[in-house]
Image (cartoon, rainbow, N blue to C red; front, side, top):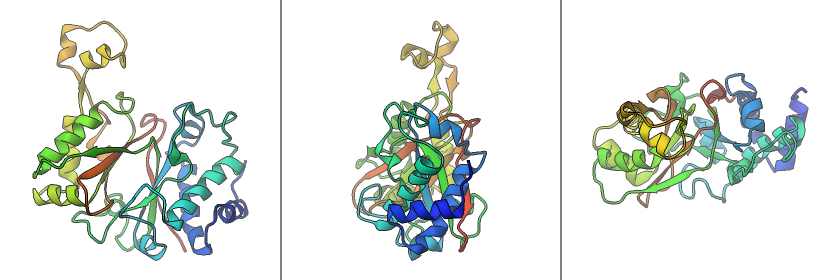
Length: 282
């Protein structure tokens, strides 16, 4: 099986893409073809992963990729059609058909299209692609094998610690609990201002979440996420949600109003699939 430019273009047209969308679609396809992303796992697993695409750089503004209100919802042609094009390539070129190669037990709506941009214009933080080694003036797409978005709410706290404690408590019992490759953390307007107002940058956010999402072996065994009888040491032994603080992808995006943000659990393990960032070439 080979993915050619012609095949990508045909599926992009079927998805409703404009010609100027093509470089971003190509970059995303390169991302899911990267061995680090590990197509076979997320493309075939019963876990039903979607391809979360996070767009950074000038191309997000040029193509009007939504980074604000109704972030994961409908209303933006670029967001819907670019994601749909990638899914059609997976389906029609790679053979990821439901019930055949795609064995997702449930799947989720992000498997139709799952594209957002980072709100770099209003963010107080370093953009995701710059953190991952690209220049600020470069355009990129980061692809991550992902479950659906989980929204959380906190309108009571006026400190970073308060908001992030709520987030960490919600994240701690999400996903597989057993060491996933990445989590994307999407911080919207009100939470972004509260957290940055406390002097937290993305590095501080990652460290806080890493320390506060650890779960005891005893809890994992009580809830049947880990096998074996509970031993006395299990009450203090802990397992982190991800292997390293750097495995949290912090993204400033979403509407200005409302004390809501979200996190997106990654699929699999770090050995089976990692988020990959690819430059968009025109």
